Length: 228
Ligand code: HEM
Ligand code: HEM
Image 1 (cartoon, rainbow, N blue to C red):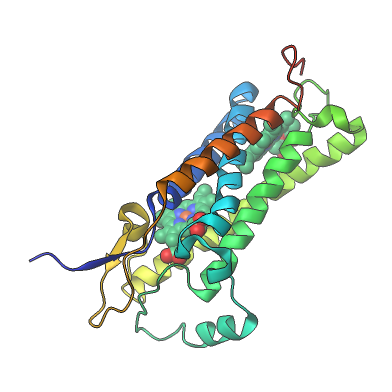
Image 2: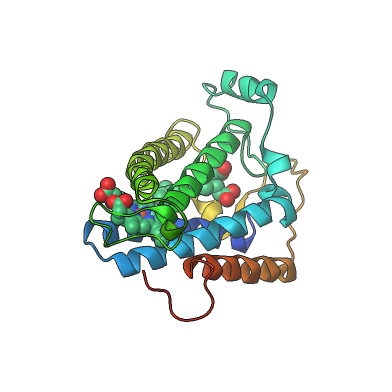
């Protein structure tokens, strides 16, 4: 007999997550190997992913919505107090503490992309498509921010992976499988309904996010090919 499960993540959130992981790694690799054309392409893809995620935070199903998982200090403190208990609560989406780590990661990656768009390296050879809108000094500052925020992302990702390991080892709760399949094991008296989502809404978000990222990649110049 198969174990009953409940769907808590829609396919686009899962796709968003694993594409983000892949493209962040690719961004790092291309920067290390000075493959800047690919580095910028990877950055625009991450920009599109982030734009879609923000849209989905308002238009997506319940577990994607910011209003649902961004909780006040009371809920966070109550959750943290109970963190040591080995009893696992099968959450319907992010828990109150995890919700804030999601916001922190999205903000850090957003800052990384924004700084990259305005960045120039010291000899001005490599730059982002929006660097021409600011002075060279400002662009150098953006570059410094770009380098610094990468370390913040590394720190947040390390915490993220440690937290997931903690749930697995201490609470015997596998959070990774639901991020892959969309489903977690149902509880004894399951009250949560399977998550419903709208592919049409998702498609609207994907098209808009891709269009905006494309316009940004052109530095908002739509005539001749960009010169950077
Ligand atoms: C979240 C996505 C991104 C990651 C993880 C990332 C990562 C990095 C890293 C690790 C470096 C080397 C920094 C250093 O040498 O100190 C770098 C450099 C650079 N990146 Fe990105 N980057 C991202 C997005 C972007 C975007 C969207 C653009 C512009 C389209 C961009 C443009 C540049 C440029 C021009 C440099 C060379 C100048 C510099 O050192 O700042 N990056 N990036
Ligand atoms: C570059 C590395 C990573 C980044 C930037 C990242 C970022 C994120 C973000 C933003 C979310 C929230 C999803 C959403 O609501 O949109 C999330 C959730 C999640 N991530 Fe990652 N992630 C990374 C690596 C990983 C890895 C390596 C794993 C597996 C070990 C993982 C497993 C998960 C799981 C299980 C969740 C759902 C957590 C929950 O149940 O609340 N992530 N991640």
